[in-house]
Amino acid sequence: MISHRGDLDVEISDIFYDSRAVMTGGLFVAVKGLVADGHRFIGDALDRGAAAVVVQDDIDISDTVVVRVRDSRAALAGFADAFFGSPSMKLKLLGVTGTNGKTTVCYIVEEILKEARTIPGVIGTIKYRYAHKSFTPPHTTPESLDLVRLLSDMVDCGVTHAAMEVSSHALDLHRVDPCMFDAALFTNLTQDHLDYHQTMENYFESKARLFRELINRKKKTTCVVNADDPWGKRLIAETKGSVITYGIDSAADIRPTFFDADTSGVRGEGITPFGKFTFRSNLLGRHNVYNLLAALGGALGMGIDLETAVSGINRKIVVPGRLEAVEGAGDISVLVDYAHTDDALKNVLSTLAPLTKNRLITVFGCGGDRDRKKRPKMAAAAAGKSHKVIVTSDNPRTEDPAAIIEDILVGFTDTDYVRADPNGPFWDDARKAYTVVPDRREALRFAVSHARAGDIVLIAGKGHEDYQIVGTTKHPFDDRLEAEKALEERRRHG
Image 1 (tube, rainbow, N blue to C red):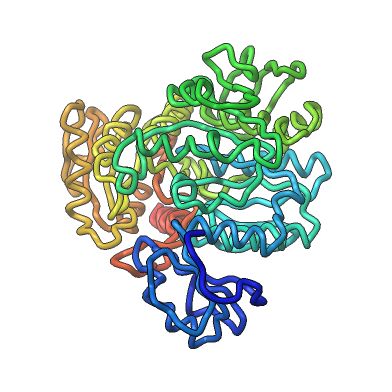
Image 2: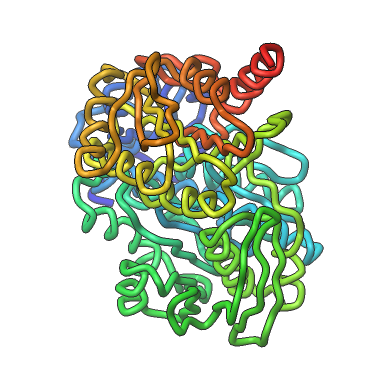
């Protein structure tokens, strides 16, 4: 606190950072957002009955309690935690960060927690869910006030353990500052979100905050880190505290002694600091072996015993939009995956390539108003294993879809792929080719209608999303439903 004016003993009924939600007796925290500055709405908050205001700027406000702080967003986290009685101290909490794998790891951990007969909660990209409640999230990780309120409700509903995806934005914007973690997990770091972070170093520094500043405060924290990832290796050296490593290629604490994979999933044996284990999972591919190992480490860090944790990773795991098979595909396979970075796309295609009996067909695009530098890398990743690539729109947002596609196409320059007219000989098996179908619905229909027996069609980028953002508007659009419609049309036309 820099300064204050008025009686600090004023009674507060609730806390708000959105002036439109303020109720009589509330504390309004004026947060400088990425789009709007809360200081502009102090008058509105006071008109709605705010009893006190927290500000970052030196603003002259009379007839109310005013507290000035250095960072109002950081202060919001502290006020929220105090108001709700530090709910993270009343349950076991795992924070999962990294570019890829966060959602799948949390789903696996949830199954482990069910196996352990705990009452689990999950906060992440697809849903916030606990105690038969489920919410569609506005952010992967909520604002600090919303997060603490959510954790408080979890505690009230009897939740004993929670797994939370922790985004780099959340770490940079102090959203998880109120959280006292029992375990913190790092999956990997590949290029993403550079529209916000600008450089990979900045991106890493945001992720590393979880392991440098937010561990070992009111709880002892176990850090679980991917030892095969180069950024993970750096993190291991810089993390102060107890570390459990996992990996496939390195001499990690948790690692498989052998494993294999096919269309039914992955299976193998491994070792941990607590003993050996055998795993058999329906999840596909090498990248999901990493996710299983990570989840195992996270569960052990939360105090779950090895036998129970292993039983949990061997349960059937269904993660919406993560290599999710579309029903009714017949003699072809159609899979929807959230892969929206070049590393994630490489991993998925590396999983599918050896399972493909005929051709591997990839449909993808890139989001607008996001990191432009990764667009050609996505094309190069698609070209690495696919036989045919169809470039389309993702969520163009306020960018011109055609301009986004042109950025993507640069990535095919140094490959042996040729550009083909979708109305011409694109499907000629004798050559690797890519084409452009800007309308995503038409691109999915194009891929499915031309697929032949034994082909795998991968629809990448949007995964579980049930919308497409064009301009600033969300339009209903679900890759899974659109693929089902395309398959039905394919069946009708023989």
